[in-house]
Amino acid sequence: MTETQLAQEKKQEAEIIPQEIEEIELETGAKTKKTKDEKTGIAYIYSSSNNTIIHVTDLAGNTISRVSGGMITKHSRLKANPTIAMFVAKQAAERAVDLGFTKVYIRMRGKTLFGNGPGAHAAIKSLGKSGLEIVSILDTTKVPRGGPKKKGGRRGRRV
Image 1 (cartoon, helix red, strand yellow):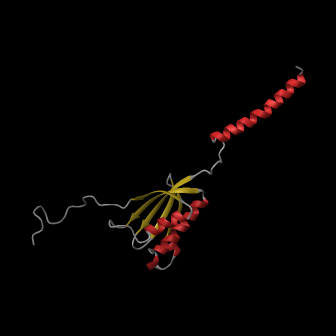
Image 2: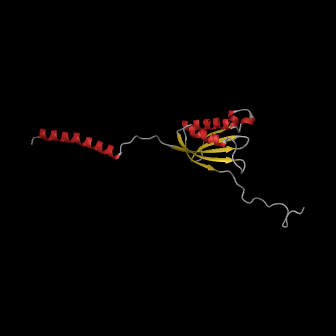
Image 3: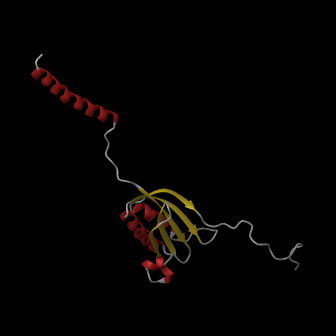
């Protein structure tokens, strides 16, 4: 065999090998589209009968955005309204999405033991619709356990 024939055979092998590698990579799924880096945050929703406050942080606790009902409306009677809570959540989520956040854990808290204010559920729905994927929802309302001693002494209150 001459050197030209050897060179032609190597050239043919070089053309065949990359095609086989590409096919194998396609079959195994090794070549996939590279997805964007997903950032995860925590949305703290405080909803009382007077106001709704949403505070979005990253997992380390650094503040991303903090919006309250008073920043949206100047009518104090409307701050806890579910409609205003939707706007609050939308504005807080816009800032988070601009910074690249895609997923969010939700921790909601109310003023009383009996539940959250009227804006909590509207805020959660609005966060989900504004482009953030909700991973989990946790109710972190403080619950009294025991508390101080009742008045009346050891034998109780005598009437």
